[in-house]
Length: 143
Image 1: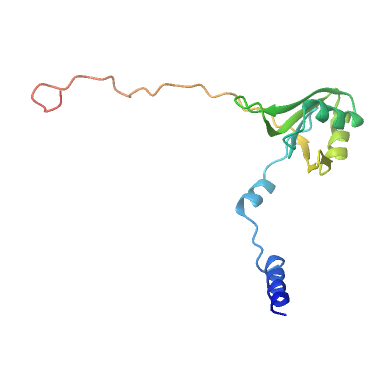
Image 2: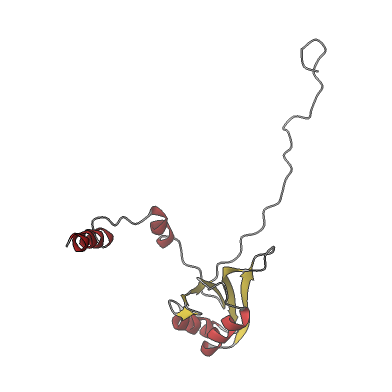
């Protein structure tokens, strides 16, 4: 009897509506502007074992796939869990999103959306002092 009561209390805590408080990052992600329609799709939530060939195979049902690529870590070579699919035309990209967004691929739910354009790379500037270095005056204590 005590075990059933303990389980009931745990059940109520886990599924209590009053205890749910969405994180501020979820609200910020929902407020993020949508990318403009393009033939390039961003696919997230990929299983670590999903290959570029499997990604292409899953998306080719919805249009002519020009390129499909799973992004991998430079050092380890393992998947980073996201990738890109490029279609030949916008209609294929629209159908790809409708057909695969929220669907299972290799046992994981994936999300497909229009890819945002890459931000231009920032130029590295070595920190330059605002004034050129000048030797201190003799007798100032700094040599």
